[in-house]
Length: 491
Image (cartoon, rainbow, N blue to C red):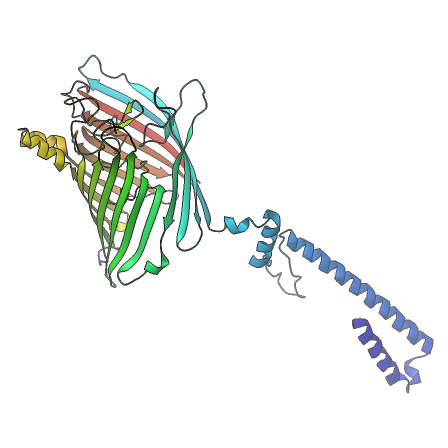
């Protein structure tokens, strides 16, 4: 097209100049000049075509194309590949798999731990001091299919139990693996596998913010309204739960949110006499948020009330995994060995928390109260004293944490005190690091953490704990001193 236009223009110019012979000395010279210009135009067109081909190849490789600057102007910024071109390239490279990779979130962490134990007791059978090195490795993903549906899956380290456990991890409160057994390879377990449904039709309907139903092996939905006095943070329940989030008040200086959670979980599916063991849990949380002129950020309150019915757990060996007992501070010396002394665990818990920011530093306080009134009533019927009932069937804890680790150079310092009566909570599922772990103990915990980078954290913890079950045949009258040093990476 350009060649035709050039030819027409040249002819017009020739016709225009014909009346002026002095403009051109020779007609043959004019024709020669026109032919030369046509050759140059053809060469330029060829060069343009070659450059276009090169640009297309660079786009396929994901390169950024630089536009030549105008004379005397600045070099413009590189133009990135468009989302459409990137999607087309990824589609070609993966055979369409990028549609599944969309909204797929991976996460994990690695923790290296050193811990030392020191025991004090006048009993000659007291446990020897020890030094232990451990690691924890966790990795998983969440895949969001749409605004309503999501699935999650996770793997974690752990340890198999003693003989008779059939290779099972017999500790639901720990994902740690000890450096031991002469360089033997270490196991890995399924930590989570769940599906979650949040129906869009029930989102932002009046005071109802959303409703969620999650089934499988999942994160504990009751952690928000409880401390580790009741739930160790590694516990992953199995079953189904339903949760409704409510927004009751939303004004400029005051917000009031609430939630209701109900869970139905399998503890032990058994065909023996006495039936299965299940957990039916309920939690109501009230969350006022108040903006005041005293702090730049709002004061955040949380008050949660929970009820846990561990149906059938304390009977017919339902607290065993293989031959490993999960009694863990819950005595079973007064009755037959296949039943715990408490008989039943119907736990009532009240958890209170307040968070505010004096001077811009986060400060968090909590108070946790829990008890097992079903066992307390049984003790009173047998003539047990009120003092003994309280000491065995009641638990309380309080703590303070200053600072919060979010990014590099952040720090936190915390203190916690816990008194956990032997029959007050289920020892299988509360804090496994408290002394030797679990129920029938009291003492203090001090924590200090510092973020070396945005993803690497150094933490130190000290436990000063003594047994409450020292009057039983299976528990020594001893105190535990436990010291932990952790180096953790998030990825």
